[in-house]
Length: 576
Image 1: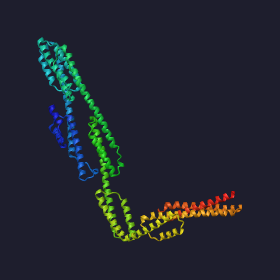
Image 2: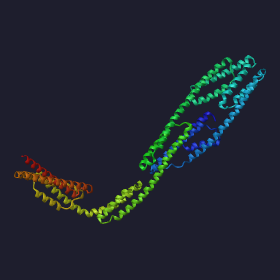
Image 3: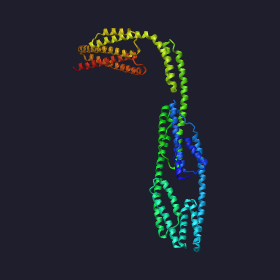
């Protein structure tokens, strides 16, 4: 295959994986020479198309209503065929390398025989002229013989060149013929130097290096030039070769550095995938969120070039293993989730049936409690599939709503009465507010309104606590105002009575009595407060017992304060 033909194959645009497999099959069946760079190119193209197909299949699955989280990678016959053909090519390439090595060894033996023959001719100078045609034939044979092992090529060529040059040095032919031969060889080697110098500017350093190898072969196979020009022409060719070789070496060093960078980036992606704590992904939302991150890492992977050849397959296998592990575990999770959702659906259907059996019941209180329990159980049952969720929920709520609608119709009259009671109690509160605003001490009016309040029936439940607190707050404020006024009167009267008890013994006995009363009331207050704390923790908001104890506590605090004021009044009277 010609070089340009090979390049055309390498850069063929493949639109699908099957075309890549066909090219590999063609290489296998036709017994073509295996080009490693083309194989690398085919492998890169195949897996690029492979991942594109996977992404397309995943997208189509989602568009058709499938859950992207449950997508399972389908079997790929093209990938199996690709791997099979690639394996055959690897085996054949290994065999070809062995054949090439054997051929190089055979060529080495042939060229070594030529060197030995020329060397033998040098031992018989008198036969040199007669052997001229034989030497030319040997030189032609040298050119036609292929490559030898690289590690032996340089030494072999030096021996060949040395003996050929020595042969020409001792060749007894006329000067005109000899100079003509030198001149002709100089022209050839000059053209080879020019070609090598031109290669130093070539854009394709790979092609330039390959062409340089052929130029070297041609330079070696060309006969000698005049002795005084040999070093000069060789130096010119060698200098041009050095430039090409340095560019070639730098090119591969750059590739190697870039491949090492790519390897580091790919290893980092593998580490991210391997560090995912699969055990912590215990909900569909977490799996879907993490799936997006994994797909982003896969997309990032596609943008990174090849790693070094010795590591490229290994790092890809590591990446693929991490991805497969993630999606295999994900598939198992969603399978379990689906089973769980089916079980939950059975439970919710059973609750629907129970609710439907109760919807026509007229035992309002008992059935309300049963349905409330069913609703509580409903909340404790896990999720079902999205496609079933709305339907089963609507069925359950329809049964619950049917019962409550029937109950509400029956209880509507009761609500009307409660609404009337609400208006009455709001009017009582308005009258209490008016008394408070007037700073009235009409205790009997307050007592009458308390009686009226107690005789008024129930109000809507949601208004009950608010009205209760507002009513009793106003009553407490009014009685507190009355008590404060009466308290001042009581204290003033107590002070007036003290003036009559001028005897020290009388004052002392009265003070002792008040101190004992003060301590008793403080102990009673402590007991009330302890009981109040206990009831607050165990009773519902608005409990009437708590409100009653609060009122007793406030009244007791007032009595304690009044007793303290009396003790203070006695102490002041004693000082006079």
